[in-house]
Length: 188
Image 1: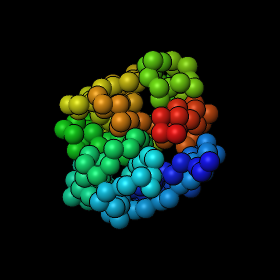
Image 2: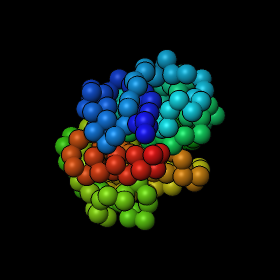
Image 3: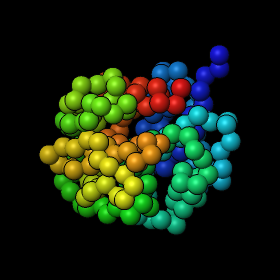
Image 4: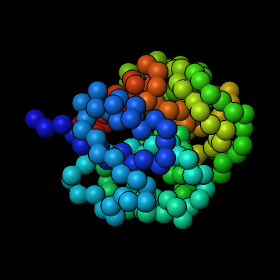
């Protein structure tokens, strides 16, 4: 049986190598493309899309227009946005970002244990953060499935269960890897 293929969209993250390595460790083949070079449509070539963190701010909509179009109308496969990847999808759906305290390192987050994304973790996880922007609330069509004392939306899921987001960088720490494992079970 062939490995599932994941399109990893590089939004300028410093940890693309680590993200791809984690997905490959979990049994997927990865192909990386830049956010401005994503295809307009995905056929059955890929079983999932993962959006990395960003260097460009998530509210710079023109920069990410093609990527948002791919996720919203160009594919029906599961999508996971990580850090800035989650923020840009949420902003495109109508969310607002707020400046907050800078967080770098491991932070505790409460997650909804009934969500398939969290099948391999406890209801409280420690995940890696490196950012200062936060979602004030989940946008229309999404709901928060994880929160912390610092942010009401640490994780989100679209109402149709296809699009997920993580404020944390899941490519670091054991709980992050296990959340990626949960995502991989959704598309495999």
